[in-house]
Image 1 (cartoon, rainbow, N blue to C red):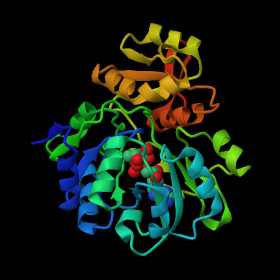
Image 2: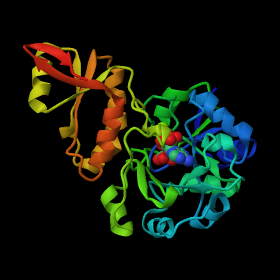
Image 3: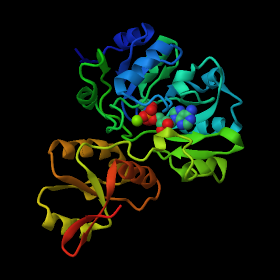
Image 4: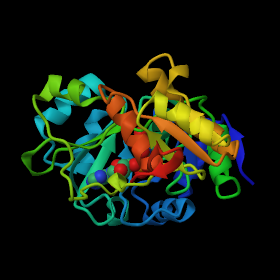
Length: 316
Ligand code: TXA
Ligand code: MG
């Protein structure tokens, strides 16, 4: 049986005993295990049905721990950490051998993050170990942002979900690689490219055709209902006329981009549960956090949609 709890000590006990437990972070809920315990980490992959080639982020309580698990930490990591950590940013650096290969899917790098959620921080401090945690959804599904959403994803598969309320950010951390003397965003997230560049100077975006981060695999956050991207509001209106069972992910209901990030996954879930024929969404302008929002929409989508000669056409 899976229980939603508020008891931090019970969550710590699970981690200490080599079990897995769902934990709140400021971005999305995570499914945590002692990163130094191979068997515990294996349970994460099994429970999520996650492909073993997709590495996990290791969460630590403060910047002093980076050198325990990462080799050669560039100055820019410390500069960024001063500004953004604890918070929604993950630093990919060369790993030390203390981190088991299963955590990093055999890569010689590790993603390190200091989450800012107080309850998560308390768990890692009390457990006294780094905590490997992917988002607490089944692989390929939408990331949960409340304890109840975790329950829908993992009921019966774990004992406890530590309830820390609704996540304050709502989308996952920005993943930044510092490998090969180059700073490169591997996954867009809440901390934007522009904000990072203010600290480090010009950085790179992921190179096409080279998957350096398996999280960049195309469909990754998909609802069960197919989601399609429409070019603009006019197209959405036309689609609504042709199909009365199309649900619209209405971006105008959100106050601004932060609010969109905060509620995007919950809204996808809500629409999915209504069991429409399809969900139609419109992208943002891609500026600021819009890059991360568009990235999540693209990955959730099964293609682009358009009305041609009065008929619905999926164009890609
Ligand atoms: O906000 C977050 O990052 C949440 C919370 C729970 O911390 N975690 C999360 O984990 O989103 P997950 O496993 O769903 O996504 C981790 C991403 C994946 O895209 C993975 O490929 C990438 O980080 N990643 C992790 N370690 C990496 C490494 N060593 N090299 C390249 N990419 C890595
Ligand atoms: Mg995930």
